[in-house]
Each structure stands twice: as C-alpha cells, then as structure tokens.
Image 1 (tube, helix red, strand yellow):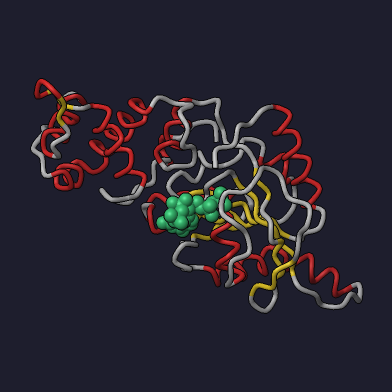
Image 2 (cartoon, helix red, strand yellow; image 1 turned 45 degrees about the vertical axis):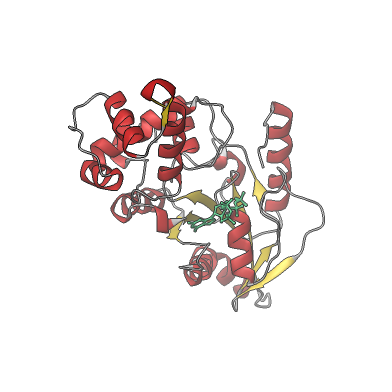
Length: 287
Ligand code: G4P
C-alpha cells in the first residue's frame, strides 16, 4: 500500500507511536538490512528517546554480511542492540528475545530490588513502511496477526502477543514516515521497494542501481545478464546490451529502455543479481 505522508499525518503518527511507547519496556526499531541507515525514520531518536532499543536489521537474506557488520558496530556504539533477522523465512528470531532481555536487564533488576514481581518484557515494533514489520510480528507470534500493508500510526484495538518465554509484543506496529529529503536516500528506498510510487524517477533509480553494481560487483552483473560490457562503458551501453540480450526491442530495432529499466529495478529489488547493502558505511556522511 502506498501511503501519502503529509505533515499532519507525520505529526499524528509520531504522537500515536509516542503514546504507545509508554506501554513498553523496549522498542524494536525495524530497518531494511540492505539500507540500515537510509530506511530509518528521520526523527526516530526523538520519537524513541531513551527507551531501551533493539535495532532489527530485517531482510538479512538480501543484504551483504560484511557491510552489515559495520552497521552493527555503528548501532552498538549508539547504545542500541543490533540483531539481524530474516523474518520471511523465520531466521534469527531467537536473537530478538535475547536482545530484549539484554537491553532491559538493568530495568528489571531495579524492579526486582524494589520487590516487584517478575513479569514479561513488553515490546513494540516501529519502522517505516515495507521493512517487514507485519511479517516479523506474524513470525514471532507464529501465526497470522496483522495483514501486511497497514495504515500509518497505530490502530486502536491492540493486543499483546506472547513471544517465547519472556516477551510480550504489541500486535500492531508503529508506522513512521521514511526520509524523503535526500535524493540518494530516495533512490535507495525505491531500489529496495520501500517506496514503490514515483517520488523519484525510475530511470534515475535504475541508473543508480546499475552504477552501484558496476562498482561493487561488475563480474556478478555481467554474468547475471550474460553480456560483455567494459566496466567504464556508459550506462546506456549496459542498458542496450541488457535490452538486446533479453529481447526488449521495439519498432525500428530500438531498445525498449522503459522495459529495461523496469527489469533492472526488479532484478535488484528481488536480489536476483546478488545480495547487496546499498548503504556503504564508509560513504555515509552526517551520521
Ligand atoms: P511492513 O509491515 O513493514 O509494511 O512490511 P511487510 O511485512 O508487509 O513486508 C514487506 C515485504 O517484505 C513483503 O513482501 C514481505 O514478504 C517482505 N519481507 C519481509 N521480511 C522479509 C525478509 O526477512 N526477507 C525477505 N526476503 N523478504 C521479507 P511482498 O512482496 O510485499 O509480499 P510477499 O509477496 O512476500 O507476500
């Protein structure tokens, strides 16, 4: 579902998430492991404040482990416990519970010292659309709880889901808006399918993806499309070669660039060419 974010919606989403946060001991900030920084809500620190936080890098099956490890270190340094999961295939879920125990340990020790009875850790998931919030909730609950593609903010009727031995999770996630100020971030969000509408032009998205792959995985790109193109060739030559190889030709024996652009974007989005982390840690500024 495409959500239009207007200032009023953002304020409402922020208010609703802040309200829900009061009920929980720990926040699970869900990001896309292919863009661990670009898929964060721009005001996330202001929303979460000092609440214990686990940053869940979801879709790890589609990302690059080396680069993800640099992001783990980054999040750790910021005081948030990082874990990587593949919610779709149910991988790494146990770590989520363990991380929640770890970040709330002191709080519960304090409660026990005051004589309070042991109780389950309460948690909620927060993140921008399409990072896999509903998929993760369903997997953690071991059953279908939420429909994928829900509305911004948090719906009213909420329930706690029991997860493992020590966790209770809110069945509805907090949905916050993505970053849309920065063009490069916009291209990455589109390339990973976080935004499917055309805030950014698709030709620019395909070009960005192609350039990334030429630099990071030239051999993989060439082999996937079974084409021979020099690494320093113009992007148009790549599009031409891909179009001709795949028979994406229109009248006059011209390459159908629109079809090539769609193909390349889908192949990258679905991790068909390879698994990449588009947020290269060393290239990111202003962290
Ligand atoms: P949201 O609630 O945050 O908006 O995200 P949602 O769970 O709807 O997931 C968005 C898409 O991401 C879904 O794909 C979902 O299957 C996919 N996804 C979620 N987690 C993972 C993961 O760990 N690995 C992979 N590879 N994919 C994941 P979809 O194409 O919209 O639906 P479907 O065709 O998969 O059902």
